[in-house]
Image (cartoon, rainbow, N blue to C red; front, side, top):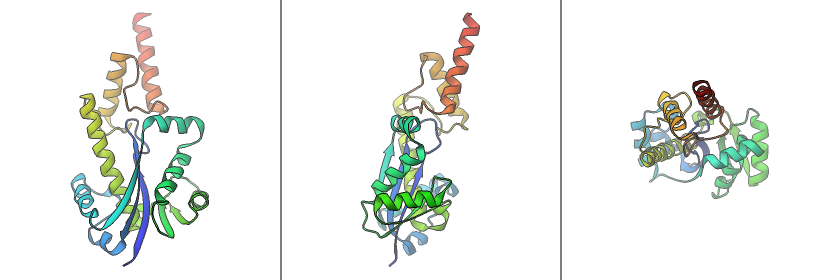
Length: 213
């Protein structure tokens, strides 16, 4: 058996909800046999089916990073640095000499070097690692399924259709806009540092001034 440790995230770009990071250790042959691949290339039904199979052939740890921590990172350091620290923390939980990571940084070598320094082990960080390495593909599936479930729980808590949470989703934008018009502030679980959030707030404030000016 050849075991591989991989790490990936889901939810870096959304305006609503957390980012979920996952590090997963699994037998590469078994991972390939159940059809792991980049989670974005799989239907929701297929992702969920593979997720259920992963429980018996791999082990993983996840980190759920909520909007407040994301906003703080954007204000004081960077989102890349935030991911690096969470990935490093997850990887250190596994007894593996090498880890493969889907790199968020445009400079993969820089990201790899810093990960190596923090974790004390070899880290191979590459763009599109979720296509090249089965363990990274599997980690992307766990992260994506976990985040989707959290988004469903948030929608249920708020009693609204919040969409996927991504800026390109009209249901998400409609929800945020409606909430701001009614309450004058952004809704819970919204990333306040995102340009999407700032634009919606600004647009509605200007519109209100024009209406009542």
